[in-house]
Image (cartoon, rainbow, N blue to C red; front, side):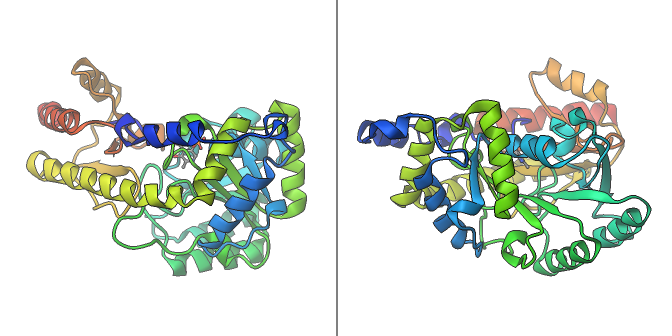
Length: 357
Ligand SMILES: Cc1ncc(COP(=O)(O)O)c(C=O)c1O
């Protein structure tokens, strides 16, 4: 229940095999790719982003080996040691450290406090200039919250005034259930403030290692240059496969199926929570994505709870991974475990928690 990836049963293995069997490569496509990545793939990503209201030409896009590499490139290529990074807390950034290991100073801003995020940003930026603001505005990891359109517009307006660039990490937005989420920040950005990150990891396969960054051409060219120095480009085979899936419509067909499967897993998990966690915890109904951010009624989320769960073969993602002082939350993922594992895990976890409470 701790794993933030698709279950093997949700990976379209057979269809991927079929694409690879029927595919045609010319010799050039198996050489080193251009710094920004395979041209056909960038054209396909550009068309795909257009469906989300994002206007990004192939030359303002680069292919990366997953969203995490996008963050590492930004950290190495655009920021200086000691830079102040603002981010929405709790945050995925605390669980992976692409900025901390490069010597950046992270400051978490909460969406739940009495001040809005733009107000907090303005106050902090008045004391020391922030280098950027990182956010996962749609189906956040770990909280699964989504910013409304109004919140997005307020954020953009403040960032424009204060001259704070935004990293929009948008790896979950294709995974909506009943209705499409509000438009991406990038589609509302008239001032070139937003670097938009996407990935195939949460929808098609994390092992392909294909993601992208959309942003101002000069920034993309700089990042592409650094990527060339790092790894000479992402896998030609993976780039080819993703281009094929986008161009033929197979990707959108797959998404329709995947959304339905994830929604069934969400409903199954909610039924279990209603059965075993009433009075022990609170939670919101996910409108998309992978996670339920479970808020326990007592602050008992600590290494002891983690160890007791491990003894029963349950791997949890405790809140303190994402926010050092958080001892009330657990991130439950319904995307990976089987129904049988979810039933065992949720029932057993409720017993452990009842004992501790
Ligand atoms: C918000 C967020 N961004 C980026 C990533 C990294 O994904 P990728 O496999 O594309 O590197 C993850 C994976 O958990 C994530 O949750």
